[in-house]
Image (cartoon, rainbow, N blue to C red):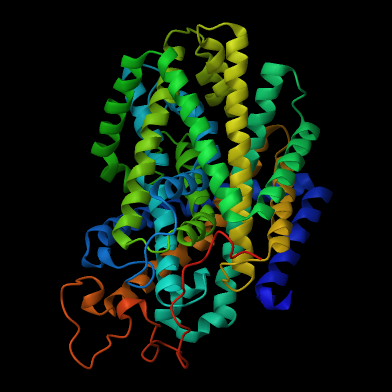
Length: 555
């Protein structure tokens, strides 16, 4: 196994993860208290840093898209995309948003509508609730993913460096990426990936268990949740053995179709004019107020009455997205060989945001409409007051004017969608973690990937246990805390990519300009990175990576 691991990263990460699992099992209450204290301290003292960092990533993505570097490919100039656009989008979307969209699709807009920081349940609060929902699920999270994914795709496939976050620091620290600094960055990425992913898998587990309880009478408790995690993790291990093409790609495409069926059905049986109105008005309000929201600090605009809205929602989301960025960013890079920087940014930034607007318009808009017709605001109270976000979608289903058997069938479809999202997230997450711990090899050993998939399941169980009756608190605390150190890493990663792009020969982004005789331009055509002026560089890098051979390249 030695040749398929980076020993410092692998063994240190494995040891600390094992210690965390044991700690969580032995002293869950103590761990929960410390995690909650950490989350609250970060929200109160470093929330502004999260907001500034994510806004920087959005500006960075937009600049990359419109700059002269947009035509540079993530690979040699002759490279072309490995996957079709449809399959590529299905994989990036299911990895980047999947479970969360289903979990919060109804819950978040209905909760925001009753939040004193936004509105008080009146008509004007409807659009504002949608506006803030899109703020949390729109451009900012995908910009976070782009920051790392773009850098890794560039340095791995075009410059021949390993696919590991530390590789993006090569222009700044040179070959020291292979020393303790690089290992530290990769270890932080492992923790961010595992805990960010566990938070998402935990949300999926809660929603699956709640649906089985409300619709089919299955007990809703930690034992059932543990069984659900074990069963789905076992399924993910089977998917791991199938490889990317037979596993992740096929499941991602299938799940996108299942989610589309669920979306279309709710749109057909609901109030189409209202849903379309929410999509248009809410998205318009989001775009109009995006600059102000992006630069509003938790103690002011986002939290005017000190009710904890920013910490509970915005800071949690920013921490969650950042903790997810090693996972989603590396996975996006892994499936984006041959695409140009502009294609990467446009596909990753705009297409998923458009889908999110439609999803929240249908589910969130319908949930708001149901609450407007209900004097007791059943759905909003469940999420805003009772903290039962996992119940929101099923409460909404029960409001539909349909026979109970049809409602049960739709709930079962939603459960299947969440379950498959769970499997694809665990599968792709194990791929990324193994790449992080094997030194950046994009062709990981399947048995090691299976081991990391099992570790993800164990961490999810621990986070649900330490949360107790309010399991969501444990998941949120983990996401906020693990995202913090990697936020600073991502800022440096962006700086490293900008520095490397400036060294590209003009022919890389202006193909009609001939290369002067006798000049190679260093990186023209995706050639090897040429160290020499970078800090600490002493040797040449390996040749630029060939196509990753995802269909049969795994071992």
